[in-house]
Amino acid sequence: MWETWLTSLRKNWQRSEKRLYVAPRLIVRFRNSYRRWGLLFLMILCLYPVCMYLIVHIHDSRYPPTITNSLSFDAKIKFLRQNRHLFDSRTVIAGSSMCLNNIDADFLRRTVSEAGPLVNLGAWGLQLDETRYFLGFFLEHAPRVRTVVLIGQAVDFGESRAEQFFNRSEVWSYITGQESILQSIKHFNLLKAIKNWQSYDQLNRTHRQYEGLLFDETGTALLDISPTERKKRRWDSYGLSPVVNKDALGDLEKLCKEMRGKGLRFIFVIPPVRQEYRQHAESLRILTAFKQRTSEILARNGGQFVDGDEKLALQDDCFIDMMHLNQRGARRVAELLAPLL
Image: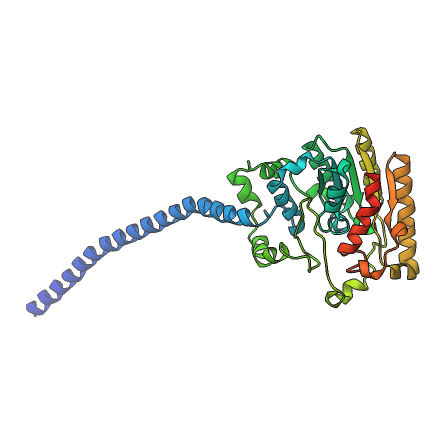
């Protein structure tokens, strides 16, 4: 009996001793694990900005920076960074894709010596207030400009969006190559970067896509899409805005006054649309009213109004869709504008 009791006591003591031995080992193991995870976290925290900067630097060295929601505008900012001599231009052409695609600015540069040097600031989808904001930014750094040409249609006189467009000082820092690490990381957007990787290399090398971004020396992207490559949806589209925003007309008037205040010539050009457009009564009413209202604004403020749509009356072989011109049509617009420059 005593032997059984002593044996039981010895076993209990051994178990207790084992517990006392294991507990400190678990504590030590936990502490070591905690330290390892802490060190790993600190390493990630330290390496993250460096990795982000490297990714951003590699991306921005080849692709447009992700400054705005427009690949076309970001590509134009990159183009200006690569061609800073264009800030010495004497003639500036501005607007949306109506400007980017619808005038052969390089023809003007080569044939009208009084106009050069010359730059095309056009980008997809710019509304008039955005064009005015971008133009104002450019003129701040381009003291030699003497003539400003705005090319636009009713589709460019819609909603107001300039208050969320871009930061002037940050964009100028980028153009001059003085952007900070934090600024580069701030504007980097991975989803936009992936989109750039997927499409920019192709768009930057072709005239044969509607979104082509193959800029000439002036920043113009002429398009050459054959009849068999046309998209029917775009060819038959009657896309002129049914409502021309009053604020946009006000922006046009302000722009006229600003150019006159700076002592600059201001020319507003309405590019051609397809003849079929006039067969639709509502479309014709919109276009006619737009021409009348814009011509009145130009007349009141000392600007020059050019109705390229009426003067040229281009046929379908000059178009790639309802209002975008091919290279032949863009040359005709340039030839119309040349005597004015």
